[in-house]
Structure formats: C-alpha cells, structure tokens
Length: 319
Image (cartoon, rainbow, N blue to C red):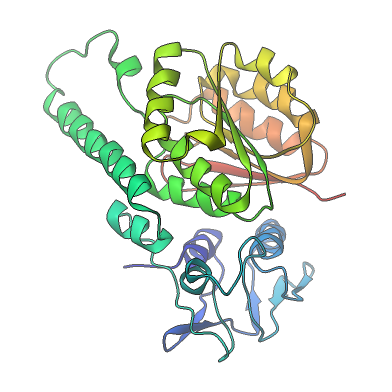
C-alpha cells in the first residue's frame, strides 16, 4: 500500500485518513485525535507544511478542524513544477497530486524531481546498501570482521532520507546541522534541501576518511557548495558554532546524543526541528536517555515515529 508522506505520519499518530478526491486530496473538515500529544504534534506539522491553513485545535475534545482551503509548504512556490507535484491541494484551483512514499528509492527520486547528478549519487548509495544487506545476510553464520561497522554505510535509508528532506525544505534559507556525516548519504538529502531553500549544511564527523568520501559524493551530486565539512569532536565543534540553527540531524555514536543535545540546544532558532535516528533500532539505553532529555528541554515538543530505524522528531516552540 502506498501513502502520501503526511498520510503516513497520520497513520503513525493514529489520526483518521485524508479523503482522496480524484487526482487531488481533500482534507476532511474535522478529525478526532486520540491524544493531546498527537494533537499538539499535528498542529506543529500543519504550521510547517500548511502555513496558509487556519487550523483550529481543541485538546480538551481531542479534535482538529481544517478549513477547506489550499495547503502548501511556504518554502516553495506553487508555480514551480516541484511544488505542483509535491503540495496537497484541497481546492479545485490546483492540479497537484499527492506524493507517493513507496520505499522504492527510484520512486522517491522521481517524486522529488531531483536532477540527474543527485539521482545518480543516491542510486550509487542505494546499490551499496543492497550489497551490504546481502553480505550481512550471507555472513550470519560467520563472525564479522572487527572493523565492519566503520566500513558499513549504516545510513538512515530512503524513507528517513526523504522525510528529513521534506522537513528541511519547510524553512527559508535554513542553517542545517548534521551530527555524524558518516559516508555522506543523509547529507545528500539535506544538501538538496539546502540548495532548494537557499540554505546551508554544516556536517560533523570524527573520521577524516569518511568525511573525505562524503565530500567526494557531494561534489559528484553537484551539492558540494552547499555543505561545510568539519572533522573532529562534535561537542567541541558545536560549541564553536554561532547561534542560529534551524534543523539538526542527530546520527552519530549513541553515547554522544545527550552531550550533543546539551551543546546545540542553546544554538537553536525558535521553530527549529531536531531529528534523531536509531531510536527504535538499536534502542539502547543511550538513545532512551536522549528521548527523555529532549522532551525535558524547555519549549520542546517531541514524538517518536516508526520511520526507518525509528526517529525522534522534536521542535522548539516559536518565540
């Protein structure tokens, strides 16, 4: 079964479905939200992706009311081919169609209308992922090499990649911070969003050979000018950043999740979004501590979503 990205999030939050209207999507006028937590998070999604919707929330009754009007991301013009394919249209004045979120990487690339260089680089990463998955399955009966983790991509995957691209695209000229460059897969999704929104990515990695590989792939994708590669201790480098971060992807060693959160939290702009990966797999004590720490920060609303290996999506309230 294929769903739009917002519909997928709706299902994960337990919110009733959007009603399809031919090639368009019509938002039903009232939905029941099972919890106040889900209601608050849906409100934040609407603020980011549907700025021109006057959405009314009643947490006491657990309801969300949508007017029947256009919904689009403010980060993109509805006159562009990209927006015509990406936005949800609730009126008959737009010919937009809902976006498919099949986990097939080629489908994801097609929907995003990425240029051929980005497509080629993503497909190279996906081919490597398939090879690594096959090797892992074949090696179950034999011990792994001691350095297998350093050689493996261990990437966020296409579903999480597309989601962080969508979220980063909701900002205008954002400063995007990636903690854990690794071999550069998620950085391609973030840099593509930075190019589309006149933003910039700052990516941090402990290992210089991984950062060098990621830089090479970004250049091949035509995105090298939109990423600053930094090598070293993430907590120290975060401390050196100026205030003004709009989006953060946390995907480094899990024992660094909480120290990095404490370092970058004071740097966040109001309305900033944080996405932390591997919250369900491996779901160790370090990521559990991160989830509790993120929710304890003043002004943070956070939700755990079963996308990819599990992501904690958090947002700092606007001032």
